Length: 333
Ligand code: TRP
Image (cartoon, helix red, strand yellow):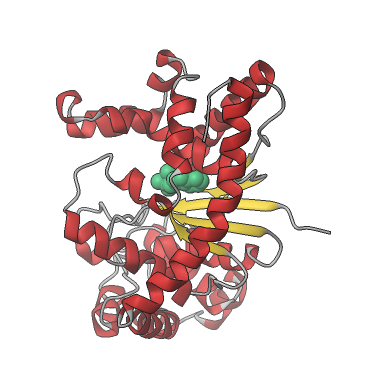
């Protein structure tokens, strides 16, 4: 029996993934690739909805792909490819733009947030139509499951609406996907500000653990993580967000339970906990960093992998786009 299809995407918007990406997305994806026919897409066309430096964007696109492979996305099992290598994404996005209401798109909360942040005048129409490009990504591959964070739920809902709308107007064409929201337990917070999600847009670098940073630098950041003056090591998200965050990191990366950690660290100081967390972070990131550097040192081989995956992706995507054009009466070659 064939496996159900999964699609997810990641923006090439930083040089290095951080621990939040690693735990929230990547480690779950590497597990899911066993049970799904998985497509993972580096969405460089989404990235240009906000200004990018061209050389940096090209480098980050490769570096993002390399980190996913290094962390366990197996290019033999999964199709890991770059969005711009498959032209059907931009084409289907155009079609979906014509089926989306202006008001409907205006209600997307991510657009509202981002356009407020950048100001209405410097927000591009591309930022406005971002969700329809994302819908195109998903629908081209007949994906059933779309693993995303809570912040992307509304975009997947829009994708479902567009798929259903198309199917009822033009005949059954798209699979209607569902969002698979990442587990709340896997939420990682900023080390300096442990009530805010760990995010690349954090106020201070000190709160962010990056996969490609020097292990020593990450160790320092863990040792300096904000805790509290209650001095007991127990999980309490409300009263002890900093300590709870450290426990979560250890739980996930060390494959432990919170209870066993609370027992192990009973009567011990925060310094001990931090040392142990720093070690497990180092053990996790070091091999990923090494493998990423290996992959990036041979760009021709990396491009060969990505272009091979793009061929596979293109075959599925083009077949869907052909069905769409035929259903709508759009002439094609
Ligand atoms: N918008 C997603 C994010 O910022 C990235 C993305 C683009 C995506 N296309 C996708 C995620 C398709 C899932 C499916 O996280």
